[in-house]
Length: 591
Image (cartoon, rainbow, N blue to C red):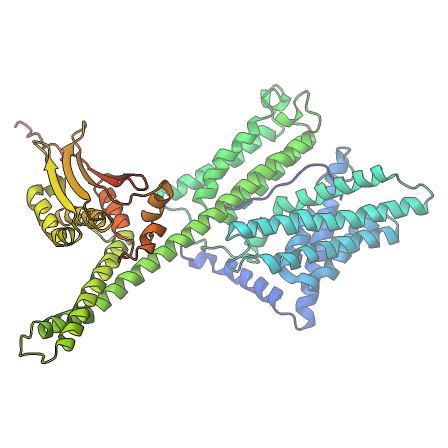
């Protein structure tokens, strides 16, 4: 129950698969356990849960103490029943505290021959410590699940790896100090502190060995995606092979190999086992959290047993505390896998939310455009007096406002629909050789009236031999967005220019430059975000959704190109869009 090594825990990325009939029995068992921990009425579930907790705690405590004692390590440097306590506390809370108390009493009073009062104080801490840690965990864990978000991993570590062992270490150190005081052999403060640190490390290590894996296997903590069919595809079989390879390497590093084998004599460098973080990270990225943490638990057992027996690189000459290196190894592997799993799940959830948002916006924009087109069409008929005079100038003015507002709203809906299609992966492009002169003239004619009204000069130039290989509609949309923004944010007397040229690698470069208000580096980052509008622009109350630049960026990327902005506040802006060169024509094969 005391210990020196640190500990470890791990997590993994879930794999999306559907359940199969072969797993029905296991899922039924998990469901039965879930019902047991959720139903608080009736004596039978309570008795069964407490008996299981007491039995597992006592048996595992006996096995651990006997193993370490066989190699002159007593008390055990890692107390694995701490995992049982954490799992029981998170599954049943205070209802399973009696079982933990009884199991601890059996281990301390009957096995370790501690005085009854000392065993009772220690057992009280061993039962209430994990219960308090579990209560704090449930209080502060995210709603999505304990291992579903990085904040949940932090809560688990804080409450069950730090607080719970601190409570059990405090009661344990107090019980030992009290026993020595009653025996007229009081311990100095330094000795009590040493006992507390050893006890805390002991329980922390024991918790990290098994607790997360057992929580996941018993269904106490949910998996973000269910584990389904066995490994059938080549990729899945490859992931399973990596899992097995990590386990095999661990055995080679720490197992008692035949005499004369270099690994058995600790001639390899002690840092080599830490390279396991690479394949373990692969497993965390590719497989479920349950599979990944099960691997961490297996590696922890192999490393611990091999080091205690006297094998492996941690037993090399000059290593002062081999078990401490075991603890550091498991902590690194565990926290690495837990963090990867949580962050991957957060990313997956964010991508799903973004996809749903894009789908919703696309559907909404499509549904709104139908009545909006009717509003624009009928208001245009009334404004043009196609079926007779309106009869009142004020009505004619109001109809003009309705038509202009409808056109503006239609433009906003089109922008939202375009961005939603791109983000949902439904915007297809078909690059071809374009008549860029006609496209540039068309775009200039569209922004020309507003430029004339503002007193902005617009010009276009092109280098000789320029060719544009791009999607016609996408190229028009990019150029029109950039020209519209340039005219919008350039004051009277300013100038907007569009130029086309060719880069050294044959790529086509389109530049739209203006002498407008310009942007700072922070403003550029904001403008490239969907719906982002910089403060200077919003203060001028310029109409728009802030989607022109983000759409242009994504359309350029769909071509394999890129969009770059060079700007300074008060000195204008230059936007440069690069399109890949046209593919070389296929060379005919001689018959």
